[in-house]
Length: 111
Image (tube, rainbow, N blue to C red; front, side, top):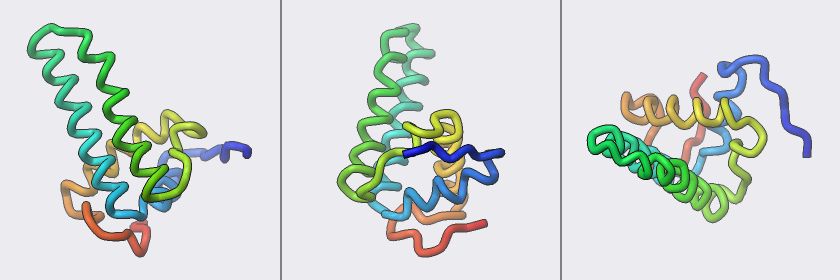
């Protein structure tokens, strides 16, 4: 299975959203990202750098649960790690500003 080479994040993001149509999966991604940010913030506030080691594990465990059990696909992280991380951040922003729903299936992909 070859990785698709995207020329830009703008080109990649619609694909990323198509891999996150399931509302439960998006909710798990959102929770994982919030927890990961919380761990990073706590590490910065307390100086406990060991917490930084757990942040990616926490984020991935939520996201991968969404992919394997609800989306029934493989995370984009395996093929496009940098754009996938950017996608997590932009999707979280898009959920917060109401561009895409946190719950419910994503029927259309915003352009």
